[in-house]
Image 1 (cartoon, helix red, strand yellow):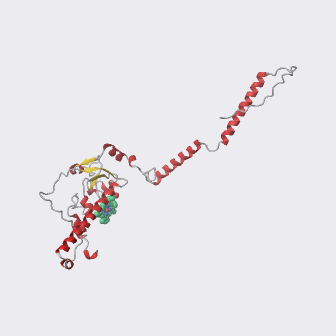
Image 2 (cartoon, helix red, strand yellow):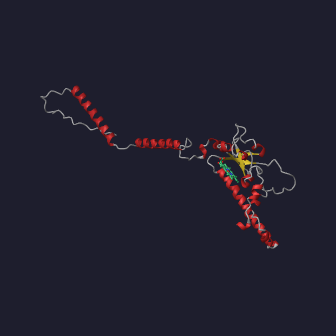
Image 3 (tube, helix red, strand yellow):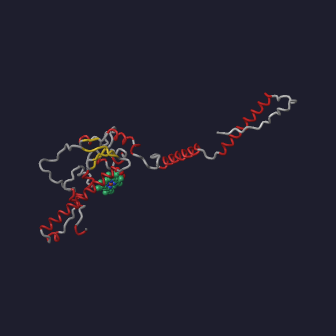
Length: 264
Ligand code: HEM
């Protein structure tokens, strides 16, 4: 609040009756003008002396934020206003999936999401988890280098690298690819019990490697900044063969990649 400073106006000497009374109206309006002028000058001075106001700080901050967003947008090739940081809820498809809840698909339903229908997103599955990979049509779309993974759960191929033969979730017998090939002479020198024990240990270690590989790929898609999980594959509606399931044979490439005991 500006403080009004009263000008000292000399009072007419009440005793001096000889003096005629002052010409009130003219003098008063002159005084008023001067007073107004003084107040204005004072207010201006006060404004100038106030230093940095809150408004100034807000102005500077807003300018800095806008400049940073603009620069980030430019530097990240129009991808992000926040230097690559994109919370999941700012990604429209992820938010929609969150609101709609997880999508559970049978293998037959999942097969529709392989990129051939442009009105559908592109999905692939690892270990039963379905991921939306539509953000990368160059890799997963029709003609893309990894299009064969889409519309299905091809967990086995993620482990073996056999992209033709192993596009299936069936992991039976896959651990064999991590079990070392024994040296004939060395294995002959072992007792039956020793061989059994070694085999059990090999299988245990090999299964751990399979699980690790599967987890690696599942996490790769789950934590990818462009992909996201949409749901799970449910009720396997295709049964391979009848009766007791035999472990699936190792594909050629996986068989060839088996380590040799003497090398480890
Ligand atoms: C078990 C074996 C393998 C698996 C499971 C596998 C899987 C994958 C996957 C899922 C992607 C896509 C990554 C993304 O979405 O960004 C990818 C990309 C890629 N992979 Fe593999 N890969 C394997 C072996 C190989 C090998 C042996 C090579 C080289 C000869 C290779 C070369 C590439 C290349 C160049 C890309 C980049 C994407 C592209 O240009 O198409 N991969 N791989």
